[in-house]
Image (cartoon, rainbow, N blue to C red; front, side, top):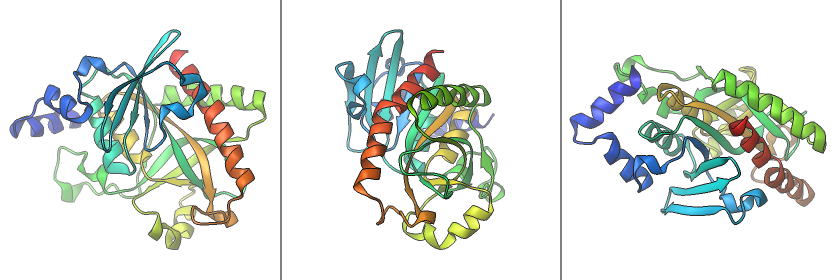
Length: 269
């Protein structure tokens, strides 16, 4: 098994699972809940339903950990920082904890003219365009070039998130989509390659979920993801310019009010 091989590598150089957990999360393994939300950037206090129920467990420079108690649900919420290496290492470290199910929430750029700013996207796969995934092997690095390969969420959790998203979005008149995602290592340089990425069938682009899906799979953690569309370069509404204040306000409304509902119902049901 790949994960056991990675753990043996750590042990060879003096680190056991408890050491890893203490270094990454600054807590004992049992302080991480079975249900985890991972996000590169969003803090839990932007979500009204989490208000007054949040205990900070670790407030670091790059990694922040909160434990949230709600009716019927104890949830660990982790803010990792941007990019595949940070999210991927956090996901691998979760394998040293009681975590059994994890949902990624974050922003994605749309590559489809049917997608608007603020729409919700549930990725059915993420194609690897990052360098992190090649290290998730027990073999030789030179033999593990996974660039361009698809990484998948847990099938059962994906179906559950899809059904719940449809229910909540239909009720609240919010557009949502099933997406094929491309995980990239660069924002600046991606634009000269968007035609090629779209030719792969990708309808969204972000930086972390290929690593997240692959890392959680080898840790035996059921994982899924929910995106909020932050930009759409195909419609000349990129991260750099073109988005209106009205679009961004709508995005904030959808993100704050409906994504947490999808997360909570997907973990509880």
